[in-house]
Amino acid sequence: MTEPKFIADAMLGSLARKLRVFGFDTEYFRGTSDHDLIALARRRGRLVLTSDRLLAKLAEGEGVVTLLVRGRTDGQRLQDVAVGAALVGVRLEQGPSRCALCNGELAISTRESMRGILSDRVLARHRLFFSCVSCGHVYWRGGHWKKLRRLQGRLRPKESRRQHRGER
Image 1 (cartoon, helix red, strand yellow):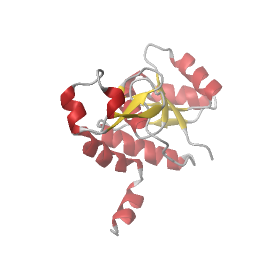
Image 2 (image 1 turned 180 degrees about the horizontal axis):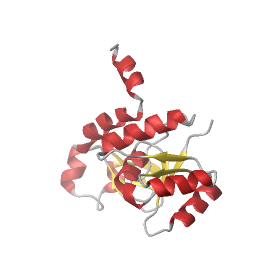
Image 3 (image 1 turned 90 degrees about the vertical axis):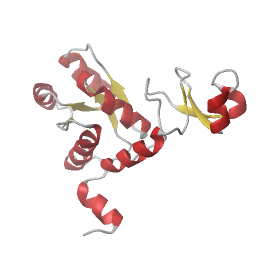
Image 4 (image 1 turned 135 degrees about the vertical axis):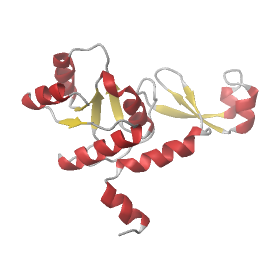
């Protein structure tokens, strides 16, 4: 099976950015009507992510797979995506990280190629950088990296997380 592609509604911008960082192709739209979002999802073969029950009902009525996301925090929302995907038979296989801003692919960049773009302080603390091939935004493994990796564990249903840690 190919990796899942998502389309997130206006209420799930933070979730969309996290999914991108975790390697999921995730489009994000705000200011788009529900009908336009559903049409885009169908045309592009994407699963709809929404916390809007009416949008979920509309999309499902049109034959578009929809995951209703109810959690209030990013961790809860990621868990909802994991559980919802499992319920509809979608396996969450992560790809390489994507740009959190535009969903573009990231390319590895060296410290030398970042001179004049990033501050000397950032260059002194890091060696490896990732730049978006679409928008040019640059990323590195800063202090937020550990928090994101812990959050990433929420993409496994609870049972599988316990088994992974050896708990029963």
